[in-house]
Length: 322
Image (cartoon, rainbow, N blue to C red; front, side):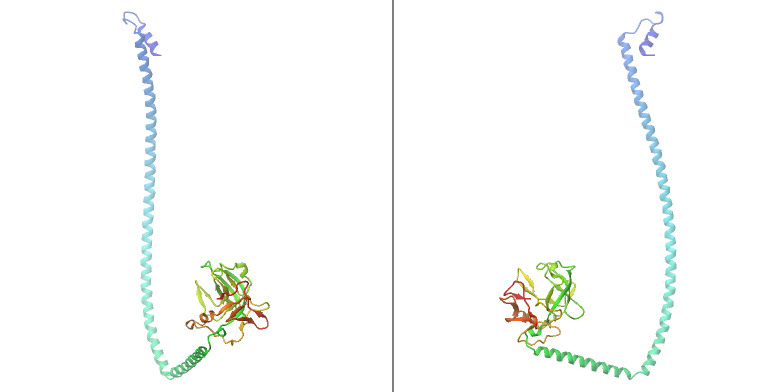
């Protein structure tokens, strides 16, 4: 029943009960208050529903926390048990190690005593032998040292010229870039010895790797091996060189790996290994140059492989060789 109908019903009774009808303004105010009350009720219902959801969420959260607490508690108990088990294993291991060390110590003492007795007996039986053996060793060592000194003295008596250099023809059978240096190649070069030599060359900036593969070259083979960024180099590729351009020396056509290179007028008596302290190569290198005909020379005399021709360069003339 609406407010208006209720008022009419209420005030529609006998005039003895109700003195008079309310005014239209009063009725409108009552209706407005009724509508406002309904809105308030709806708002309260909504808030009550939200409150119920919040309470339910709190209950669920509390339940999850209780479960998490129980899980953590169980995990802690398991960890404690594992720690105790590990402690027991450690104690058992230490006890066994102590027993083992004691046993080893006892065995070593026993063996040491036995070893001393054996050494004493052996010393008595072979007291004279060490003198004889040592004497032979000393004689052998003395002969070897004398031979080395004689060879060194003979080398020192030789003139310092190109004849002291072991220059040979070689063939590069493989080449790759140095793993630790961008400017260096590492080559395997056949120099007629059966086993190729490892050679490190600083030619990356001047010669493409494709032009190095299977190339015939001229090498200095009696330099003392030296490590270049961790790789031992056992020879040196000879090149005509300027600050801006480097060209690898070319053997004559028909030359084979291992062919020796000679300079007419100079005896070929190369040192087995050039002594770095004597600076032999550095002294000779001053006079190693290409001539106007692109031939490699020493003091103007060309490098040659007997019966096959001269060592040359591609284009560089009157430049140093190194």
